[in-house]
Length: 439
Image 1 (tube, helix red, strand yellow):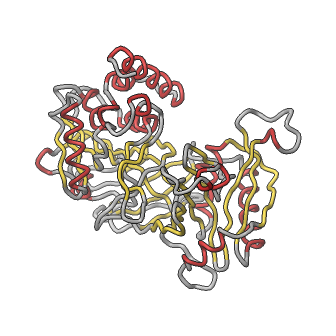
Image 2: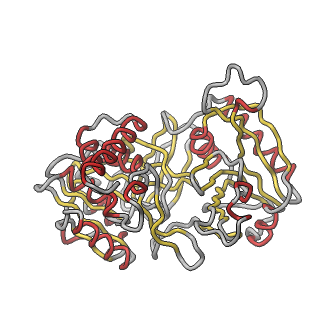
Image 3: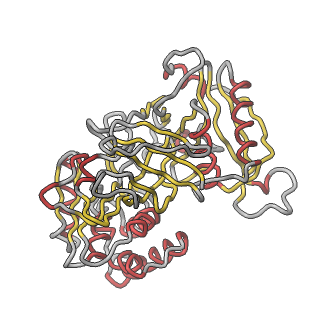
């Protein structure tokens, strides 16, 4: 299926699927999804595979960890909607990937607009440039440079978007935004990511042009983290082939010692201590909303990811049982993801099974999970009990997530200081102080 009419049909299906799943009503975004040929940005795949609503890894480091990808079209659409793109705008993108997202934005801003994409990896930038030219978007500027510096020659911009997970707002991005500008970034909040759209707060003015900034929309997301000298303090550590743990900044173990990565990998290979929580929730709510709850309330929070090798070395590795995180609440082709807490002597993670397969299933809504926890290591029971208590507290609070949350950003260069806010989480970064709080 590679003739133009067939490709047009599968692009139409992708656009319909994304718009339905996200609830976005923008005709400009739908048209871009229908028109931009994603298969030309993923030439290593059969055309039909390129139009799945999936993120696709395109480059890995020496340890096999993914470092570049084509993001899931749904999250591209969500972030484009957050940007509020319009014809004629000037857009700066941090993280070129395959070039597909830049092409979508170029389609929306039109010939009177400008799109500049910056990537720290010269090979990734060169390939994105080639893909854009082959797809009919040669006027997108792709620069091989550290994206934290932006791209001053084409400034000012109406919009800035980062397509890599960031821990801070680089001063260059804010400086290069023109009046009325908006910036959208996948912000790391101690292991959980939210796509946050920021605009200058009304209090920012001639007396204090640096800020503060306030969030105007938030959406759960998951992106590979920024590389280079401006990478955040979070660490993604490979425990075993295909199995990694994300350790956020500020992680504190009870004994004051650093995490023993070798021991942690051994714990996860052992038998778990499993506890029921009595809580039911959707998969997305468990991964994002409960993950955000843990990030804000437990300094031991972490995230664990498992990838199944694309080319297993033996038949056994390709069987479904090969996943050590088989009950992780987030499950996609070849991928498992969960959140948890880590401490001296063990780790506990969230697990889930379809609600219809345990307990009284008659009234269970489709897609609900029965949330459980699994503890590993010498302190498995204690950690599993602590994690289960957090799950129950989240449920009793109404299973809150990003809805109703606000994020304020105070650049260090600003004279403004964060004020008191109820149940606020203060995150200190080198360039910015973030305050996350409920409305």
